[in-house]
Image 1 (cartoon, rainbow, N blue to C red):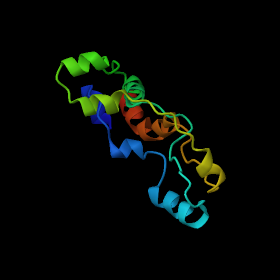
Image 2: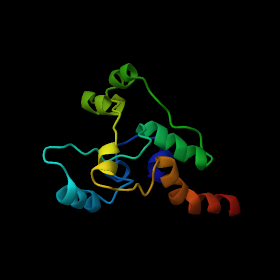
Image 3: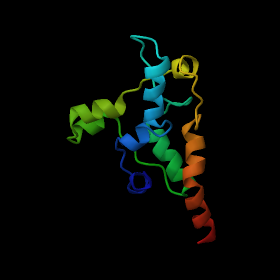
Image 4: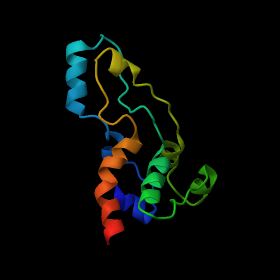
Length: 129
């Protein structure tokens, strides 16, 4: 993730998408306590676009924010339309059902809390180094 932030590229990452939940715990909860036919969104309390996440990482590492491009500019530059569509899409997810139906507690209620833990060693190195 830090390498994505350092080079300024905004790429989707399975590691980022699942940053807050051990997937097996969620699947276990659905199997044991889930409602038949229900859809369970696995997300933290502060869903954010990748650009916001990468920007926060870069800011905490003392770097400039990643470059952002308009959808039209990205398409004009030749990026694949499916990639542009995925990167520019915005979906608001509610995790209320996994907390209520599955009685689960978020380990990291927001990506910022997750970053606090993940980046703390790097931030200490930057101050010491």
